[in-house]
Image (tube, rainbow, N blue to C red; front, side, top):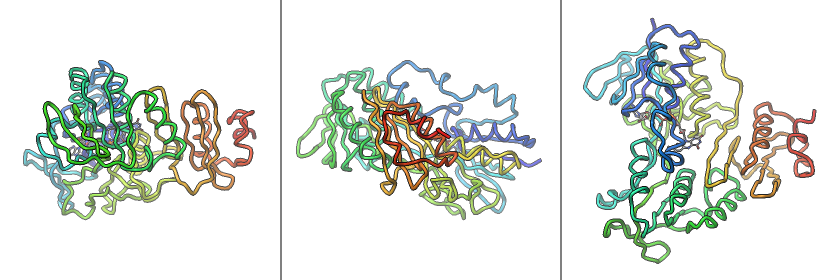
Length: 407
Ligand SMILES: Cc1cc2nc3c(=O)[nH]c(=O)nc-3n(C[C@H](O)[C@H](O)[C@H](O)COP(=O)(O)OP(=O)(O)OC[C@H]3O[C@@H](n4cnc5c(N)ncnc54)[C@H](O)[C@@H]3O)c2cc1C
């Protein structure tokens, strides 16, 4: 019977293994993951894990018993270090080999760090894994709050951590090189509203700024921000992620940018698939050629991959979507931001806004702050490619639902 090996034990791996069983794959399924934990949910790492007493058991997708019942062999603390495509064999960190008939790469990404001296790194925090988040949590809970926490990077994770730290009473400075927050992913209006929010909540936000001259100081770090020397309690480095593909070096599918796949998540090697954060799908509705980092992409790609391997039913067409929580702002987005779309803004009052990205008579993207119903309607319109009358969408006397789903 055909043996499927999944490398990486995160969101995409867990979903794919269980989907393969649901789609009646009868052969062995093995998941090899280098962390000590069962596959767990990462979004809480920059939110609830920092602010509350969340146990890891509450963030794992499924208890060990489910993998056993499904006859999925899940090995933790097991790092894969090499691939031999001809022999169809993986090398594990203990030197042993494992054969596969079909290989699924689901190794995700790791947080990008900065080339800083060891003494500075000792006061620096990355937030990608449970263990990294716990280290930051210990600092936030036990550190003296007489010096600020400096967050380098005004992207989603940096801003979520900044919000969590402020809510825990920390003075916070956010340093962003770009002219606006979350600049690559959101509409400028959303950047502006989030900037106002973070400042109103007491964070100092410095845009168009590179931190300089970072060095260790008494119990923390010292750095220069806009010419001012700052003594900080610690640094959170939130400057993006690097894919985990080192173990594929020397193979035909290796890339340090991400593993390119077709619409079925298959790489150029017909026996190897890639899913989740590590993959770049060349043929994906509204996101072809883009490496996405989101829960939706991990789950959707895993289901597509399982369907391709088993011949099972593909999930229905879905545009990419994402959410982030910062203070009491719930930001949700569907499709990808592009300045080339015609953007229509609906001010819903009380800090709630809806932005609709239209191309002709189709909604291609949507972004909301605290407007969950509008988000649900836009998702439906984008997924189902519903025709809309763009000129009518700014009419706030009517609900968006009534304007879009009127037929
Ligand atoms: C702090 C944080 C907050 C987030 N918040 C949101 C959010 O609000 N909304 C949203 O949609 N998404 C969010 N995301 C993104 C989302 O969690 C990821 O897109 C998702 O986890 C990707 O799943 P994955 O399975 O591809 O990768 P991962 O979950 O990263 O799993 C990959 C696993 O493979 C392991 N691995 C790597 N190399 C090897 C190897 N050689 N051998 C064995 N194992 C290996 C890794 O250690 C890891 O355990 C967040 C992510 C983070 C880090």
